[in-house]
Length: 403
Image (cartoon, rainbow, N blue to C red; front, side, top):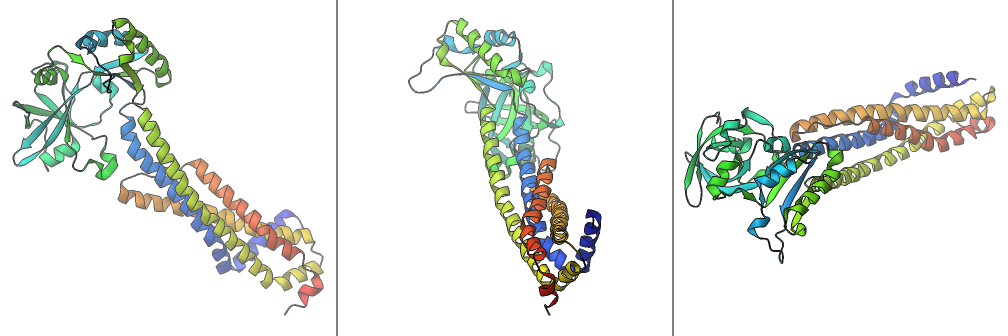
């Protein structure tokens, strides 16, 4: 009896006992579905959370003055436009922008909330890849000290102008010493919106021309404690950071006062935490695969008991022990292989359904699917060996005597 005859016989037998075959597959289906659901949904949520944050710069780094206790700096140590131009001339540097911010209260009609404004230059948008949802970015002519324009995030826009288009609207910024009226020219996607409830109660976010913000803050000398830098190539960032450090050493200040650090380090740590969490959840889900394997062995043992007379009759007419062994193994492998495929499909469909409610698109990894189906098939092989050996070891006369 060749392999294909055994395969045909195994398939025919499985279809003869449809309910038993389905119950055998059920544990594997649930196990694989759980793993696929957790892994794909976890990957989708991770991408949803970190995707917008990564747009803020995986090839960016920051230059800042050390303001820790015990460290002092002079006015001459502050970074200036001259330093910005010098850093921009370094090979591998794509953009440099100062970092400045201010707080104010904003009011529109009866809506009032805190507002955090960030001063931006044209290079800022090369460093931080904001998604503009409405309107536009600042025009080159608007980056001046009397450029009374603002871009606000979409959450602030919805809170201040519910159901309205905020473009062209006037917005009042109430600072400690005075009030300024600015015009909304753009609405951008809040990069922290993916964190869900994490933005609740936070100040509104907005972007202002840096020269205008300096004018409001009284920073007419154009001096900064922080600069953001973007490397042309993320893979070359370490070399560029070293070149920037050497450049700062030539400005006459104590070089130890300047910190040059990657802004993506926090994101890397956050990604590691999410990866560990996804791995843990998938591991817990994978336990159900082991339970499913036990179920396969139990059902196959029941199958051996039910088919003792069939096995005895086949051995009596010449079937070899190895044929009985291979047939039962084929049945177990078929059940777990197709159970794995069905489980993968069901798991991904459930992930898509849940993704609709949580606002995340599941990401199905072909590697995870392959590993799950391979593991489920191996479960059929491993847990099917004992029942198959038990069936193959039956003596024909003893089996035929069973009522």
